[in-house]
Structures are given as C-alpha cells and as structure tokens.
Length: 389
Image (cartoon, rainbow, N blue to C red):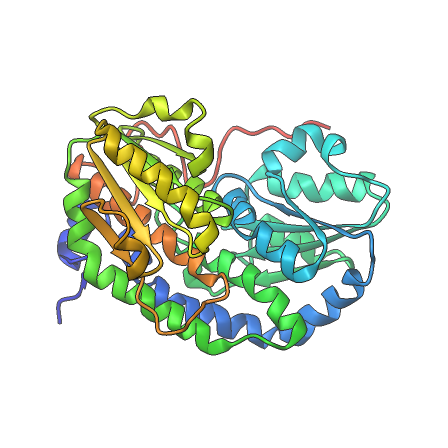
C-alpha cells in the first residue's frame, strides 16, 4: 500500500530527497504521545532527583542548548518560572561557553537543563565541564534524543546529573530539527505537572489531535503559500511564542538554504526599526496569543501591517475562531481542540506551519529538504568548533 506524507507519495519524496523531513513533520502528533508515555515511565526517578533541588530557595534554573535547542529554552522559560516558582533563564550554550561567569552566579546552586538532539555539539559538553569547574553547587538534567550522544554519556557519569532520553524516533534523520524540537519542548513542559502529580494526560491527546487536524487540513494551504515568490519571511510572537517565532524563522531559512531570509520579533518590538525589512517580497506570519490582553497589542500591529500594504502576504495563526474573525489576513490557521485550555501546551502547535512552509519552499526551490544545504555550509551536527581551556 502506497503511503504519503504532507500530501506527497513516499516514492516521490524519496526521489526528491525529502522523505525523512516529511515523515518527521507529519508523525509528530503520534510521537508526542510516546514522549508523554516515556516521561511518565521515568516519573519517580525525575521526582527523586528534582524535588530536593527545588527545596533550595536560591536555586537558579538555566535552560541551555545551541541553535534550535536554545530556542526550546526561550519557549518554555516563562512556563517553568511560573510553575516551579524559581528564577529561570534561557541562555544558549554558545553564550555560556565564552561568558560563563558573566551570566552564572557560581556561588549559588544552579540547575542546568540542557537540550540536545544528538548531544554531540561541542558546546553542550563544554557547559558541563565549566559548571563542574566553577560552580559551588551545580546540577544537570539533559533532555536529549540520543542515549549514545556525548552529552548523555557525560551526564550519566555524574552523581548530580539526570538523563531524560526521549524515544529514538525523536532524533530527526533530516537536517532540520522538527520532531526533536517539539518533543524536547513537550518533555520540559511536563516536568512541573509530574512533580505536582497533576498532569492531565488527556491534554496531550488533545494536542496530538489538534496537530493532526492542522497537518491534514492545512497542507495545501501552506503549500500554496510556499509557492509564492517571496525571499523574506518574518515571524512575530509574544512571550513564549517569541521563542517559537525564533525557531520558525530558522526553520524556513535552513530548509530554503538561505534563499529565503528569515527574521523574527515580538509584535511590539517590531515597530522599533525591524519593521523596515518588509517589502513586496516579504511574508509576515503572525503567531497570535490566546491571552486576550496580549492579543490586543498583537492585533494592532497586524492591522497596521495589513493597512501599510507593503508585504506580499500576511498570514495569521490563531488559537480560536473569535480572534481570527477580528483580523482578516486572507490566509489563516485556526487551532481545533475541544479543551477550554491546553495549559500552555498549545505553543507547541505554533511551530508546525513554519516546518511545513519550509519543507514546501525547499521543494519549490529545487532543494532536497533532508539535506538542503547545497554548499555544505550547515550540517546536522555543527562542525569546526574548538573548545579552549
């Protein structure tokens, strides 16, 4: 029986060099259910490790990673700060390697939560070494997709470390991180609920169902958008959706081999100069918040962009139909889930449009989505980094 992914038959995707990326995007809803089950099987171990740490009043939590893995921290930072009631900061490994003592109070206990797809980036392991060498009290959790990676192996050797290894299929075979990003983001968002024994597992089912609906119902819509002759794409998001916007801009830029330049900003920040990037070759994607107060600011910015009539296309991603009715973008995606609230988990859905736009634009440009970098400028695991003592 012939299978298809993102509306394309598998044999065609193999020829086009996009079978892995297409499967990894489409299979995310099912993958998230396995991530939930995996995290729950390790619930007691996670609680045993984390609960004593959270008793420290002065504990700081650092969310770290490189590239897409760093954007996970930006996306979940607000959620963890609010639910764990601890100072929580997202700081990339690429910043900490060069300026560790400028960002870390080495005299207070610090928990580093490291995100990594393969765990083989040199910066990932360097942070463990720096923390162990300089911090009086440091603790480590790695959330990774590869049990054999250098990061997981290094953490495994520490008494003050814990590995949370996600299902093997979360480790994307394609260059662009898709299922790995959303899986690590989901796993980190589940941690507070695990500790408080109040995770509503049915919300993950709702999340999965909403993603399936989005992928099924909007593939052609996003394929049509990707076929437009644009060379710039801007993603706008507020709060946790700013981290998603940053990941989104990178996804399209990576998959198009830089032929489409991606930018990101907050709705309010975009007015202060960055708005100059908009021209008639630009697509603006607005990731609208479910918070009514925040949405007021976002709506004002979106309507201004539409009224300026400078962009080729303004595309809206909405949490509800009542908000989409307030802004006529011409193209939009509305999430479909029955629960009154997904308790913040809905932020995971917002990256799917960018993954699909990037995939279809890659094909549209004659590239291979699984390995779009024709010159080899970027690679699946970063190359050329020397860690200096």
